[in-house]
Every structure is written in structure tokens, then in C-alpha cells.
Length: 618
Image (cartoon, rainbow, N blue to C red; front, side):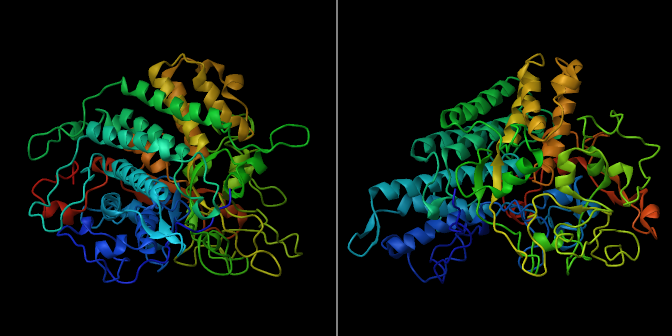
């Protein structure tokens, strides 16, 4: 697959369209700033396509975890979620202190409410766009292309409603163009069931005109059938999960101004619908020969877990990456000699790196050992000697861990990539005086750096590459295999496919199958659910899913593997040498209140509405 940046912030009309609304969130994009009427826009093929292209501008950017282009902060369509859950400590931007300080309905910055602008723009395009232009000029829209463009707008409208649902729960459904002169511009929230039905029906209606894969390099990031099936599958998993399915008592008790119940009572049969939606995805992928994880094999035919895990993000130039179901062509990786995530995850001691994205100790402890067992179960891990260092200053804590650990975490004592090859090995430490300690306000806080997703060819010196474009993956297959195991476990814990699908992910990661080392789990709902949670935590680390998982499970305020509040730890960055560094050290008290299970609808919208009701607790 050849990806160009066609659907990033493309060159748009200068000036603003003369359409407006009394509701800010119903306005079309301010980027469309030409003094043109809608009639003038849609009578011009180039303007019509640019108007359509801007509907894509709010597709999320999963690589964007710390700073925006103005170095200020992120929003809910970036990926702040690892930094505000039990994964990362980001030392800069508006993500820095959210986990420890909290937020209110008036200052919650990771909003997605502005998606209604793009939803309205999609509605306008679907209503007003028509064929125009001519072949002679080379700038035209014919019947076939118009149908395709309108179908994409419809798909994105459904997807944006899904993204709103994921964060807020049930929200208003906007499927018509609201007249800017209308007197009633106040909208009530749909119920969970109404919203799910709407999104599902819209995606199914889009399917016939969606391609299997985009072959055109200019349209490679456009939606496909796989993307539609993936959204449907996640939608039904969310709808079956406790947060949206009777498990949040305060939400079930919520009524709108007309007395309408927005969140349903519990209905366990919804897990069967989730299983069916996931199987619809797999059936479609089977037909395309794509229902398999991305795997690189060694010469002897065995799986190479390191090459496999790395290639998920970097093999995107053709159709061999069966794991990626839908890409975003936006990316915030940047360059090691400039700005972006690559430099922010590179140690300061390595050619002007700017290490400020820390990994919390609780996440480090979650990684399995090489035998596939947890640190509490494996004989390879000894609590009595975990802090001892070898001759290379590598602690026992970091030895014999699974491949994902080494692909995801920069830890004390490691030699930085490519520095040995260029004759100046850079050994990374985080203790006092090491260059990556806590003497800077924007240090990594925990004594670990995020390494996952970084390009291993880069180095800010000599002839080494300084940057590498790759798209962000919005949906990948491992996520859905684990969701399938979860849904099956709710329907029938004795289903053999539960361990089978967990083990597909574990086998690719280079660790033993649960069926081989923990066969006693089979049929035990609680133990299997715990195994699924553990696997999702490690496999999907820093990809933006953990924040939503612990909430939909309603476990974020409970003690255990999903807690989001309380004390969090790193290593001792006040230590004066590698050995003093090696002790678990409290760095931050994090806040989690029950109301945080759902994000607050912006206070500015609720306060001026007679119909829009706020989420519980806010």
C-alpha cells in the first residue's frame, strides 16, 4: 500500500463559506474561508473536492501523544490517552498533569465535540454536491465519482458519531443539514441503543460502495470495507460492555429533560451481537485472504517476533500488511533533528534528544517473562534479586522479559540504537548526572522512556536517517482477536476459541501459548477475562485503547490491574549511580473519580442548551 498525505491538512479554500449556525459545533470548518456561496462551491469541481477533503481532517492521529504543532497541547482526536491512563507520564503539554490534577466540565481539553463541524460539513456535501465540470477541462465530477464521494462523507459521518460515543456515551444524532436560520437549534441526546442502531445502519449502507482496498496512491487513506466492519465490531463490543450496558448505575438512572432513559438496563445478549459483528469482520477478511496477523518468519520457518512487531508499523508500502485494517495518513513522528515524537522519546544523552515521555513502573511490571508467565508467576523472576546489576549495569528486572518489552521500553543500562555501529556507543542511564536524570523540569519522571513504534534506523548524527514517514494505524487485527476472545468469554466461557485467539497474539509476540502453560484457565470466566485484560494491556500499550478499555469494563476505580487512581511509581531518579537508581520510587498520586468513566460534555454547550443533559457527576 502506497500512502501519500492526501487526507492530512490539505490545501483548502482560502476564506470562509457564507454558511453559519448559532451553535458553534454546527459550523463548517473555518479553514474554508473563501467568500463563496454553497452554490458557487458545488458548481466548481475543484472547490467541491476541497470541501469534501476537509471532512477527513478530523480523523484521529494515533501517533500524536505529547505536543501539538504549537507545542501547547493535544485534543481528543490526537492520542493523549496513554498519558492520562496507567501507561505513560508525559512531561510536557496539556497532557502532563491531567492524571494527577483531574479536570472539570469547563476545562476538559481532550474534547471531541468539535466533530460536529465535520459532521455538518458531511451533511452539506451529501445534500448539495452534484456533478459538475467537464472532461475537456480535466476538472470534473461525474456520476460515479459523486456517488463515491457522497458515500465517503456518509461513512465519515457515521465514524465521527462512533468517536463521540466512545468518549461521551450517547450523543445527539445529526443526519440532516440544520438551516442556519432555524429558530430551534437545540438538540437532545439519543439513547445508547438509538445511537448504536444509527451508526450500524449507516455503515452497512456504505458497504456496497466502499472498496476492498484503495489502489490509487492519492486515495490510499480513504475508508474501505475492512474499516467499516472494524468500526461495527468495536461499536457492538462497546454496546455490550458494562459502561454502556447497565453497569454504571448513575448513567442508567440518568434521564433527559423529557424523561427519556439514555443508558439501557443490562442485557447480556448484546455480547452475542458483538460476537456476530466480530465474525462479520473475520468472514470478510477471510474472503480477502487477510485474516491473519502480521508475521515475519525466520529462515527455518519459525516466527521472528521482533521483526514481526516492528514491521506492523513500517510495512505499509504494499498490501502485505494484513494486520492494518485502516490507516490515518497523519503522523506526529517528526525528526530526531527537529521536532516530534521521535525526538521526544530519544534520550538527551544521544545527540540532542529530548527525553520526556516516561513509562510508569506498573506498565513495566505488566510485561510477561520470556516463558510467557507474569513476573508473579514465572520462576525467571526473583523479587529478592530484581534490583541487582550485572557487569553491564543491566538489572535482573529487565532480563528474560518477553520480546514486546524490548520493543517498547527504553530502560537503564541499554545501549542506544546505532551508536555502537557508528563507533560511539551511548549507554543510557537515568540517575543523577547521567544526562537523562531529573535535573530538567521536563524529564521523563519514571526512569524509562517510550520506545514503541520508533524507527530503529534513525540517529541524529552523520549519514543516518533523521526521519521516517509512516502512517498511524487506526485499527489493527490483534485488537479484534482479543475483543473476540472477550466477547466469546461472556457468551460461553467453555468456548475453546477464547484461548485460541489470545494465543494467536501471544504466539506472534514470541511467548508460550496459554493453552500450553495455563490450560487450567479454560472454562474459568474470571481467569480468562483476567488473561484477556493482561494481554490487551501489553499488546496495545500506548496505542490509545487502554484508557477506553478500563472504563468500558468499569474497573478503573477498583483496586487491581486496571486502577487509574492512587500512587504510581518509577525508578529512583534521585539516585547517584546505577545501583541507587534501582528501587521503586513514588512519583505521582493520580486522581480517578467515578464520574470520569464518561467524559464531560463541554460545559459551554450544556449551559446554553435546554435539551442537552450532562453526563453523571459533572
